[in-house]
Each structure stands twice: as structure tokens, then as C-alpha cells.
Length: 331
Image 1 (cartoon, one colour):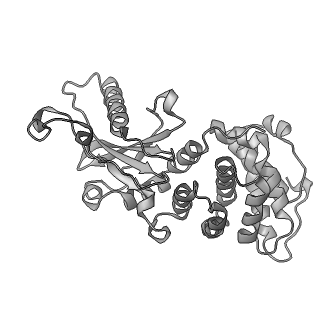
Image 2 (image 1 turned 180 degrees about the vertical axis):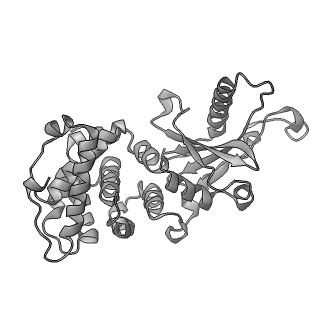
Image 3 (image 1 turned 30 degrees about the horizontal axis):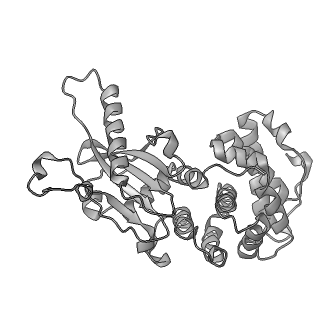
């Protein structure tokens, strides 16, 4: 069976390409003196990625634009998802900063006085050990760096090492906390025993518009990233935590995790694939077999979103007592 290529990258970009989650992450993990320079509500997400193709198995990135004390600037977040630290990560960051500046210059060719915006580099690290190396570029250099400081490039990395935080210290929106806790513990041998507390956080957003879809994304990440857990293992934990009344949902969730079409949708990051995945997931939870993946592929995006909205509402209603059963004719 195929698995999602680079599940860490897929989850990272899926969640932190959402403005609310990005804003929450930066507010909780940037220093206060830096945040004080941000103009409120100026955050925007860039679609570009600067990681070299051959390194995408180890790094993910997102670039944000912000207003820094009245001037356009950037926050560049590089997520290192190896299980061990990279001593020369500063060189990667420097290369990507140069790419961002070159892109900026190419987009402002007509300006008479072209300047370079500030780029704040932030590393998100979730390796199996505490980061053991220096955080300045000059820490990599040998020789009299102090005497030649005026002539050599140097910068400090803003750094979020998840191993520096207890679980209770990880802050942010519910979805951001779930993702960061998963990143923190995903390499742990006892990940299964940690899942109930992490997934419990999702209970608060299950009634929201995209709650079901977020659950699906999180479960598929766990399934793809943890070799020691089967689809049935993950589904059983999810049912125990999120569905107190049980009802055999663990099997439907497990079947959904193994649905190749949904994995394809997440891997490619396509909105249509994500919506189709949500529809199939909701159908299984409602024990319906109205549409298969091939039939859904033929529908236009607006029709798919309308169908997903109805199914999500039906899933929420099923948790209420004496809810009416959804019929195929209702869709």
C-alpha cells in the first residue's frame, strides 16, 4: 500500500498555511521584542517554497510577509523534520534567505531605490535530542571571528526546539497545539500512550465547520509517520477519545485511513482531493455508501463542497440524541 510522501511536510504546510494557526504560532514562539515590531493583522502567507528538491525529505518551509515597524519584512520558518540535528543548518537558511532576497528584487525591478527587506529566520526543530550546536552562523567558522566580525556574515537563528518545552508549555490555538505535540512526540517509542491526551484536544473543535476534516488530516499524519501503529490502532484510540458512545467507528476510521485516494489528496495538497476525502470519511462514519471516489471525481468543486457541508452537519447531528437518520435522497 502507498503511503503519504513526507507526512511531516504535508501536515506542517497544511496547518501553518492557515492564517490563524500561523499567527498563533508566531505570537507564542517569537520573542516579545520582535513581536512588538509587528503591525497587527499584517501577516500574509507566501506560496513559494525555497527548499531544494533533494532536501525536501528533511526540511519544510513557509514564508510569511509582515509589516515590521512600518516596513515590509519576512518571517521565514524552516521546519527540520529529521530525527537528528543538522550542524550546518545555518548554511541552508543563508541560501534560502538569498533566494528570498533575489525573488524580492526581481519583483521590484521598476523601483528607483531598491532595498532589501529584513528576513527573520525561525527554525522549528523536533529531533530526538536537544539541539546541541550553536545558533549563530559564526559558530561554524574557525579563526579570529571576534577580530574580523565586521567583515564576515553572521546572524542568530530564532529557534523553537520542542524538546525544550513540557507538553503543558506548548501554547497556541487548539489545532496548533495538537500539531506541535505530535511533532514533539512522533519519534517517541511510547507514542501510542501519548495519543489520547493529544487527540483529546480535538474534541473542542469537532463541532466546528472544519473539525471533521482536521481530525482526518491529523489521523492520516499519525498513520503515515508512525510505522509501529496500524490503522486499527490509531482508529481505536480516536474512537475511545472522541466518540464515547463507540458504535464501531474504529473500523470505519481505519478503513478511511487506508483509502488510497485520500492519501493522494493529502500528498498533492489539492483542495478537491481534500474535499473528496472528507466526503468519503463522513460517509463511512454515517455508514453510507452513496458515492465512491470515482463518482466524486466527476463532480465540480462547488457541488463537492455543498455535499461535504451536508455530510459534516449530519455527522455532528448523529452525536445528538434522537437525531434523524440521513437518507441518500437528502443529498
